[in-house]
Length: 176
Ligand code: IMP
Ligand code: MG
Image: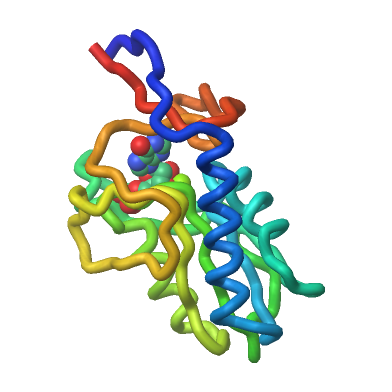
């Protein structure tokens, strides 16, 4: 697979507008109730930092998880696990999972199930990009920045083989 170039699909300015809009929606829903943002490493780190600052509330906790999958080569047969779990007590708090991009939905389905078994008051999700047409399991995000049909997306924290994370906008990889 040869990567030839990247093509911008959303500029840094467009992302900033969407993240602010998501912040307002999240503020409206939770008001001043206790809230924990749980970012999914590594891709969601930039989105999570911006979303945190888009919220208009004095206190919000943050934590992070990192997923690892193992098993057969086919994605559908992979089992998921945490290579990093949270250390925050979720008792009596709302959880908002913050993810960069949803593809098949398997990662988010796993995370939703995991945190629904916790003592959290509620578990919802905010995703920057939803590749909704590629869904293989039943998962619908609560807050979505951008809906796209497909393609491999990099920038704003998202990587291809650990590259392109530092690009300010979102770009589609043009692959030969
Ligand atoms: P899913 O479990 O199939 O929904 O995949 C979600 C995860 O795969 C995301 O957290 C990303 O780490 C990765 N991923 C899926 N699509 C892309 C993409 O277009 N660019 C970068 N990472 C992606
Ligand atoms: Mg990810």
